[in-house]
Length: 194
Ligand SMILES: Nc1nc2c(c(=O)[nH]1)N(C=O)[C@@H](CNc1ccc(C(=O)N[C@@H](CCC(=O)O)C(=O)O)cc1)CN2
Ligand SMILES: Nc1ncnc2c1ncn2[C@@H]1O[C@H](COP(=O)(O)OP(=O)(O)OP(=O)(O)O)[C@@H](O)[C@H]1O
Image 1 (cartoon, rainbow, N blue to C red):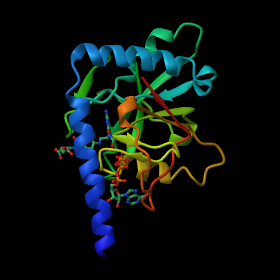
Image 2: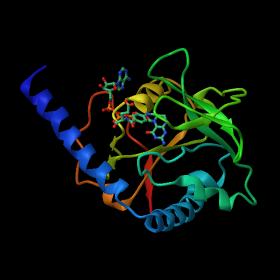
Image 3: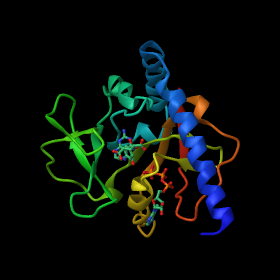
C-alpha cells in the first residue's frame, strides 16, 4: 500500500472516530427530538411518497433513529425491511421483512435482526434503502461503520435496470465539506437529516 493510500485510510479512521463519539454523546432527549425531525423529513421526501418496500435499520452506536417514520404509515402501503448479515456470503447484507414487535435475535455486532426471517427479497426489488451514515458530503459520498457491508451489497445492484433509491440518514453535524471517495464507494441519491 502506498503512503497516500495509508494517509487516506488514516484520515477516514480519524473522521469516523470523532463523528461516532459525537453521535454517542447525545442525550436521550436530543436523540428523540432528532429522530422526530428526521421522521417528518423522510415522510415528506418524494422517494417515500410512492414507495412500497422500504429498508430501515435499528439504530446502533448513536445512529439517528429512522423509526419515527412509522408514525406516518397511514395512507401509505409501506412494507419495512431490516438488514441482516448474510449467513452464506460473508460481508454481504440481505434485507428481511420486519414489523414492529416481531421476535429478534442479535447479530455478532449486537444489533437485533428479525429472528423469523421469512422470504428475503432480492435487493433490487426494494424501493428505498435508508442507510446509516457516519459522515456524508453534498456529492452523496458516504462513510459508514467501515465494514463495507452496504458498499458490497449495493455493488451487485449497479447492473440492474431497476434499483432502490439510496437515502442516507444522519444528524446534520455529520455533514462534511468533501469526502474523498474510495474506488468501491457507491454514491447515495440523497441524504435526509434532522
Ligand atoms: N444500525 C445498523 N445496522 C447495521 C449496520 C449499520 O451500520 N448500522 N451495518 C452496516 O454495515 C451492518 C452491520 N455493520 C456493522 C459494522 C461495524 C459495527 C461495529 O460496531 N464495529 C465496531 C467493532 C465491533 C466488533 O468488531 O465486534 C467498531 O468499529 O467499533 C457494527 C455494525 C448491518 N446492520
Ligand atoms: N464492492 C466491494 N467489493 C469488495 N470489497 C469491498 C467492496 N466495497 C467495500 N469493500 C471493502 O470494505 C472495506 C470497508 O469499506 P469502507 O471503509 O468504504 O466501509 P463503509 O462504507 O464505511 O462501510 P458500510 O458500507 O458497511 O457502511 C474496505 O476495506 C473495502 O476493501
